[in-house]
Amino acid sequence: MAPRRYIAQTPLSQFHRDPVISMDFDPTGRYLVSIDAGHQLEPGNQDSEFSAYLVVWNVAATSPLRHEYALEMKFGLSQVLWLDFGLVVAGRDGTLTVITQDEGTHRLNVVSFLAHPSLIQRMAFSKTTNLLLTASVDGLVLWNTPVHGVGLKRRTEMQHACSVAPGKRHAPFTVTGLYWLSDSQFIVAYMDHHFVIWDIEQSTRVREISCRGQEARVDAAFYGSTAAVSFAKGLIELYDVEKNFFAGEHEHDGLGASPCLLVHSGTALVHGTEDGKVVLRNAEKIKVSSAPNSGIVVLEPRGEI
Image (cartoon, rainbow, N blue to C red; front, top):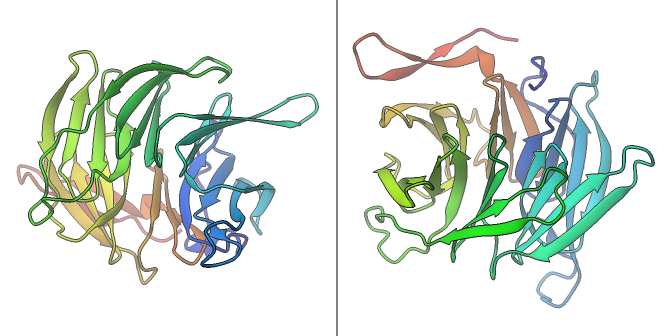
């Protein structure tokens, strides 16, 4: 569980010089890993070296929040997950990179392999089944994950199948969020298509969910049955996935678009911003509650930190 005390709207650091695009807590909740979009060292020259950063932060430390270590990656990144055995990093070139640390020497071990023929857009991990789900524009892949993360094995592949949002008939399948709802069901969030719930035991779609907002959806974060969807102009919409209805909306308070959202254990809402900030908020001052017999979920203030 993540630490329950955060400094509201306080950037961890200006370490990142590019948009922060993915974050995750470690299993203890004491550490946070963040990655940025990176950039070509020589703008306009596609053959020049690439630089992107992966940073591990000690968010349980007293202020100022500090980073534990940082890795410069020479290829583009898209998402990071922190599992029991270490970090799994998705690459823009379709690679999966597993980073583990030796407990005795603290040496980092890095192993990469090609998992998709194109950019890996999103990943999701099930702790109860040890299944890793990855998505690209080409489709979805399920992986069996060993206890120590060595030798991920491809289990099955699935093709995208969903309805397109109004006015987006020719849009590609851009996945903005993946989340396991149960041991057998997961939800796929798309930028321009309806969200889809899949059942892996029946190998079929369960149902689709449409969003109210008409602009592009840049990220989707999930906690329990609540989906938080970030839009390009800075709005966050909330949906109750189980009851299949709109739950409310929340402004970014002037932060602008958030290409990265993270909701952890209902206590922390984390934004990654376009200018490289990692912003932590206390999510307890905003709660989602159902109004009796109204079928509507509203946002209620919980007070300041």
